Image (cartoon, rainbow, N blue to C red; front, side):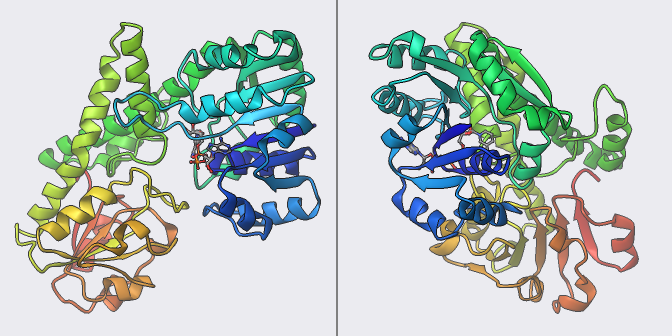
Length: 432
Ligand SMILES: NC(=O)c1ccc[n+]([C@@H]2O[C@H](COP(=O)([O-])OP(=O)(O)OC[C@H]3O[C@@H](n4cnc5c(N)ncnc54)[C@H](O)[C@@H]3O)[C@@H](O)[C@H]2O)c1
């Protein structure tokens, strides 16, 4: 099939490449000329395991093309995926849909035969209705169909998630579009993915409801970990004990820092904003947002406690600064507020991240990037494990840290407290 992905970011690039790997002809469009130029040279704009190989393979096979020419790409394609950003508005907590509507305006000038236009971007309920309105100002409704096909991939596992999704949600009441899309996804359906066809509005809401629920699970266990810290109970026991109940499940039930990333923070805010628009109250999600906003402050207070409130001139090492492992995405990572707060209090921060130095910290005084784990931790007074990279799981602290009085604050509970105790390391974890 002939596909076009508008927006070659995380979602557009990963799904575009994966669709081409399934044998489709895919054009990835982006208005960012540098990104397109780099992609043509095999330079990948994001860190995502396995992505580079797949891009190079399909680009060489001529099934995958990169361009900035939206008009030509739309006219050459049968299925158009809108994959542009939907960040939080500056003026409110609603989703900023300007990128999506701009694309709709552009598409309407390039339709001369039937096109399926799909929102893969996460968009609030009724956005599909708006897109339809925009396009139908110029094009007959017989010539296009607007479908919602939300994307559920996780950064760091994106290729696997594309190829083995739990479900494929197609929101349309247009039988022709449904048939074409079922066919497009048939290689994944035959590997076990569930295909569900809903109304367009339901598909739009399924995405927000799913993200809000996962954010709630994380926040729930984070709050319980606060209680565990007061009553000498280990939160890991609670997570295991609860997670084994099939009605609950163990995923997203690990206590740690505030949830971050490009989706949960903005999507929880957007769904609350949508509920306000329709005069309903999603009070649970409102509480989740509030609790998560407090989480970084709470963990900072714990850092101060661990350092006996003597933060000035303390050497603090962050292991990992991205919002989670296996990605270079810094969007809404809790390190973005923690590191500046610590240096404000006089700490000297050294950090190591497997995905390299981060621009946001480059101009911060007393924040330095170390090229490897050893040099990051060697003189530290406090080592904070912020992100759960495998690289951090087998560090020999006894050998590599030269400062005798160092402490470890493991915000991801990746080490065994018992082993740490045996080695006489001053070790602090979450929820114990
Ligand atoms: N990142 C994720 O893990 C993830 C997962 C599921 C869903 N989503 C959703 O998918 C959408 C995209 O997210 P992302 O992380 O891929 O965003 P991104 O910011 O990484 O990429 C968006 C891209 O769209 C391009 N763009 C914007 N306007 C354009 C236009 N008019 N023409 C061509 N290109 C244009 C931008 O230059 C950018 O490269 C969002 O709605 C997001 O919520 C993201």
